[in-house]
Image 1 (cartoon, rainbow, N blue to C red):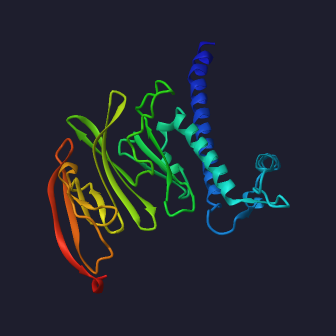
Image 2 (image 1 turned 135 degrees about the horizontal axis):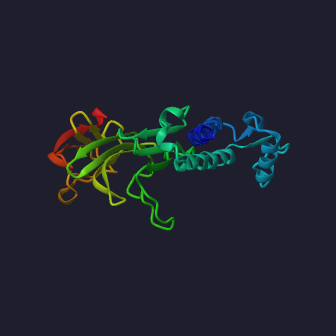
Image 3 (image 1 turned 90 degrees about the vertical axis):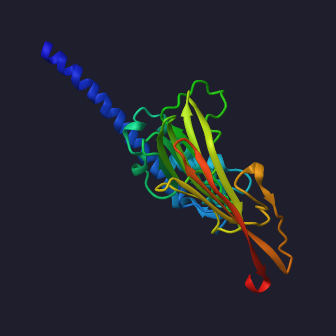
Amino acid sequence: MKIISLLLLVVFPLFLIGQKQEAFVSMVDKLNKELMQYSKVSPYGEEYISIEEFGFSNRERKELLKEADYDAVLSKNKDSIQQFHMIYYFQDRVLAQLDQLLKHPDFEKNDIAKMISGDELSVVKSADNKLYNFSLDEKTGGTYRSRFSIMHYTDLVIQDSSDLDPYSIFEGDGYNEIFMFDTEEGVKYVLTGNVRGCSYCFETFVQLVSFENNTFNLDFEYAVNNRDWNDGAYYNHETKTINVNYHIDDLSEFCGCDEENQTYFGFDPNESDYIQIRCECKFVFNGNTFELVKDRWEKVEVSDEDE
């Protein structure tokens, strides 16, 4: 009896662990299915899409038709539905399922970046597997390519749901990469990203953040917003350097790497001949933060023939 009892004590916890892991994998599979459905909808093209495209069960179809049966969301025969309605529909489902995954006790035991399939949901994370960014195209159809951005830090303790957003220092459109440093002040993270705000509005940004006393701190930030997609602020992790290059335009009429010592040049695209100003900054990580080591600008004569 003692041997049987001992076996039960060992096997039963293992059984529970197996169940929890199976539940996590099942939740990821469900998220991947929602993402696959989301990939079928687009703000471009036909206004309506056939409901058959989604392979809903009878119960799911009935629930959808009941929920969407207003205004002109459904076609006359109720066999097609507006694309934008389905965009919002699957956005809610994707984000709700992701939220459940982030709260799951087995989240840290799995490599979620490798488990997410397709390219609808972008996942970037730090080397210590603690800081994550998930971003999803909002599919608004506009020139502003907005994204849902969800930050997640495994060491953050949510103490009160009524508290201010603990991730408020982060950019709202997500990130392309996350790097990390071990410093005398603790671990710090470099986050880089970009977003297209309009047909010819391009923003690039670099942030340095740290986490202390259950709070995120913004230790450094630099962003460039202008009309030329070749310009911007870019980080090189091998050299631990931020290189900034941009030309004066109507979105960036100032030149200077220090906000307190910027020069205003103005910009008049209607002039037949004008002075184009090229601005250049360089910041190098000094062990704790990024330090300005280069701040210069130069004039370049531009005429109509050169444009």
